[in-house]
Length: 169
Image (cartoon, rainbow, N blue to C red; front, top):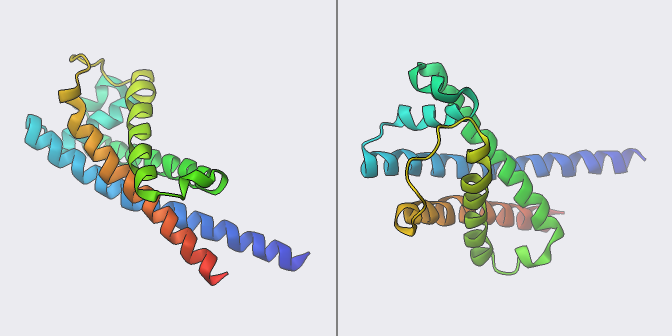
């Protein structure tokens, strides 16, 4: 019984490590892309990006808040990255087609993450309503960011770390 319990704790620890690494890598890449893209496309400063994210919880008050709102936005961003990493990790373990072509899986996963955030999470949050209607041109950069800097790194990190874990088991 003790060996089984120890093995279970080890597996849980490995799962937490894999998920944390995927969330950290993805969170950093996506955060960097969000700040660069927002500034280059619209002249939006990084603090404003994170206040927008914080507005999901705090509403319009986030935009008049100080550094605390920036921290809240970053915290929310990494919590969301962690949630998607957890979801991918469990789907990866249970659906064999997730590991067949990690490039395709990562690209598709990035689009799934974008769709969930754009169509469900943001509209249900306290962020101010969008002023622009949907257009492919307006979201093309978001799709690319989510495919190559969210989905693909998350999928690759989890795939690679799971393979390393299996090789050492």
